Amino acid sequence: MPIFVVAFSWVMPEHELWAHFSENILSSLIGSTLILLLGVGIGVTLLGTVLAYLVVMVEFPGRRWLEWALFLPFAIPAYVIAFVYLGVFDYSGYAQVWMREVLGLPGFDIRAGSWAIILTFVLVFYPYVYMMTRASFKRQKVNMIEAGKLLGASPLRVFFKVSLPLARPAAAAGLLVTLMETLADFGVVSLFNYDTFTTAIYSAWGDFRSIEVAAQLASLLVLVAFFLIYFEKRARGQAKYYSADVTNKKPYHAKGFTAWLISLFVFGIFMLSFAMPMLQLMIWSYSSVADEWSAKYIDLITSTSILTITAVSVTVVLAIILALPGRCKQDSIWLKSIIRLATLGYALPGSVMAVGLLYGINQISVVSIYFGGEGVNHIIYGSIVLLLFAYVSRFMAIAYSSIEASAQQIKPVFTQTARLLGASRIRLIWQVYLPMMTPGILAGGLLVAVDVMKELPATYLLRPFGWDTLAIQTYELSAEGLFERAAVPALIMVVFGALLMSVFQTLDKKSSRTT
Image 1: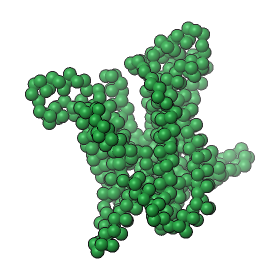
Image 2: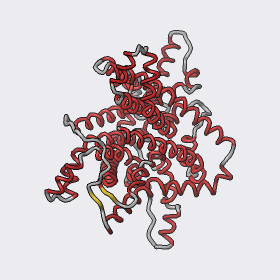
Image 3: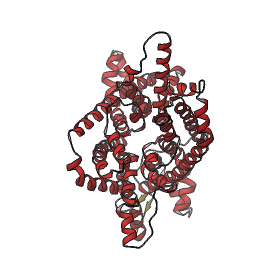
């Protein structure tokens, strides 16, 4: 629905305001957005792929725990890492003060240019590429790499000629998710004062009070998102890549100085992307929690928990409903079309989802009032219905992919045996499908919970008046430069996110052993 709604905004445009945006702002928005996407895309592809290859193919000190520690940046919202590094490396931050006073180096503006914001996104989003390519490398046949070694090929040549081409589809999938997340971000770009389509949408809606122009900008953002999807499919082409079972054998054993150098590199990335921001949050929280903590935080944790639990429950139930028919009717064109539409929301930035829903509700109210009825704005805006709809639509793809993967692992012999024993369809679902799909259901629910808890753009626009969350509190305090106070709600979010990711990794380990 949001796609059709934002497209409909071109039927009745605000000509004067749109002319202002198109003549003075649009070209710079396109340029800055493309620079950001290009820089982040190159960075996460290089970093995520290299890290995945090292932890899967090379034995080095600390590899076993670093392999799982590299997932932890998933638990930290991008805007949290952004305000941590801004607080540390801004002109008045202690890092720059030390550089100027001790080393005698000149200061610099961390917000100038695009290098700092690109680096921030790379440190936050590399796990998407890392996760995808790690799974691909784990399923590559070790004997192919051994054959390359026997032919005298160097490890670098084997990587570029054998391992990397086989991992290309996985890297492309991780890159697509990364670029979608970058395109959807509002918190990081606003903290760095970096103009993109997302900040322009908020400006049109908040500063100019024009939902029509916001919807028009959102429609352009949808075009960019669909172009990225098309580009990813073309990049992968029609090639199919077959792989072997998961193996724990390492083709390369690094020794001596090389081994410790690799370990230092991987550990350094972990420190920059998770450990150092986490430590800084703890330091700031310790110094400010006595003044910042109040009964309000109980309300923030409660409202965040209510939204998260409700959104996860609805999303998982709907994902199960979609996945179960697909298990039985895999060739149904109608079912495939419904699933494709239901999971399309992840391609839409949260700001597009929010503006589409707001604009749609606004138009319904206009039509209702025109025919003598009452508007529905006051009814909808005062509840969390729109916000839950946005969450479910946006994160359905995450829950469905995990649950559907578990459903596909159920061997037909189980269902055939149950039917021969006279089991009804309801009994088959409760006693066969759901128990065997439990790992996928839990994994999908955990990933959705982490994303809902961190979600900022949709929450910021669609939340009812007075309904604040930990994400909103974190962003508002950091936007005012109150980094020490912002560390308190941020640390609560990160701790919850890290716990959820730890449970997810445990489930993933068990799943890897049984497949």
